Length: 152
Image: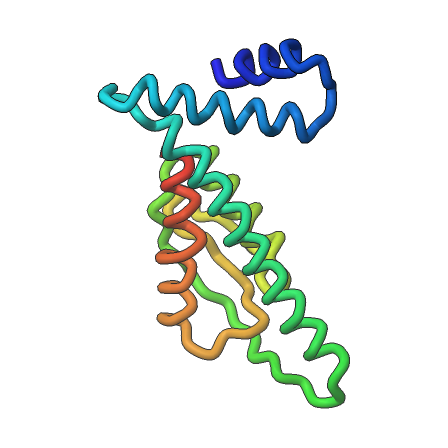
């Protein structure tokens, strides 16, 4: 419905620009939000802000990891402390597991080695593993929680 409102906005203004379409999308989102304030199902209105928040969170994590790896490559002394951990996931569906493992593999310094037969444990190689418990808490409370909020 929001895409339809965006196209209607573009047709009414007569200007086929990305910024005009984006403005129409935001305007349509606001109109739909106002019209559905009392509705019980409000997932659409939380999913888009969650998707934007997840994208910025993931980009921040990726940038931070890239800088850490780049600093380690540039300096003559190595700071990495590699390790392998078994991470117990709360993700259940194949889509959730796939997206979580892909997001973890895209982050420099971490690599998914294997997934257990029952799809509950993810085996990770971590370049900068100082404390296993702290690292698993960081994934559980950060990346996985935000991803599952977006998908569920």
